[in-house]
Image (cartoon, rainbow, N blue to C red; front, top):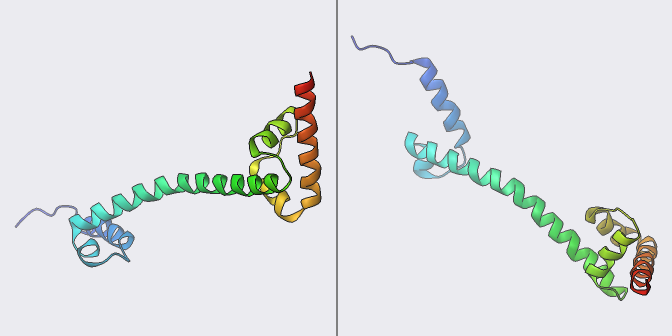
Length: 123
């Protein structure tokens, strides 16, 4: 009689992999080797894209701030530099939200940044 190799534990381990491969088509959800390849590759993409989402949001916030600055007659880079010179530490997400939902406050931020840049240039 052949020796049992793992038995139920192996089936349970495989079933966990097959559960992760649900939603794939064809061999990628029915054949053991293809299931392993598909699940590992999906994990790699998931890891990578969790970081790319952060990059994409930051680019969106910068685009929104840049558009709001252009409407008020200042470049994005000079605006950010002016905020740093004025010791105003707001992240780009909050600046974007202010630009959209509270234009009056954003106007005061732009004026503060402009005056800080001019004061630096005069000194």
